[in-house]
Image 1 (tube, rainbow, N blue to C red):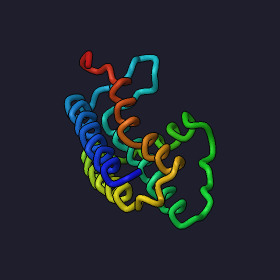
Image 2: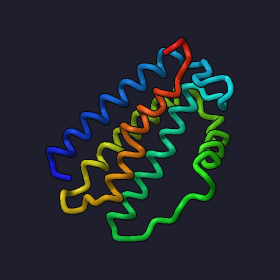
Image 3: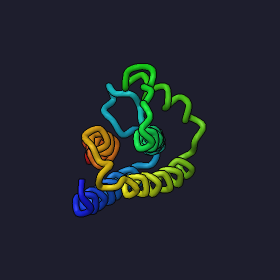
Length: 146
């Protein structure tokens, strides 16, 4: 990935993150998903994305050092459920604040990857836990007939 492509990626990250935050702020305490889905509020979505960013930031740093990644235990659904339970004590204001600072760290991490370090694995990781992830969450939200 060259500098221009990274700039485009960063702009997309910011735009999609802002779009997701707008939806989350419009429905701060409501259950956001279909009644047949697990109940997630804005706090849960913020906390969930924080966790994936933290995991991906740590993973990127490990890969850039040339070390091997260790995988998380469980399926994606099990991991998400476990993290949601662990984050139950976090309030909305704390989650929102931590999400914004973690997002800024996420962008710094992406920017820290030099042109010669980008590879398929890093690109996939950034795509999975970046703008694509935020769009996916917006597509799940039905609160207020969004």
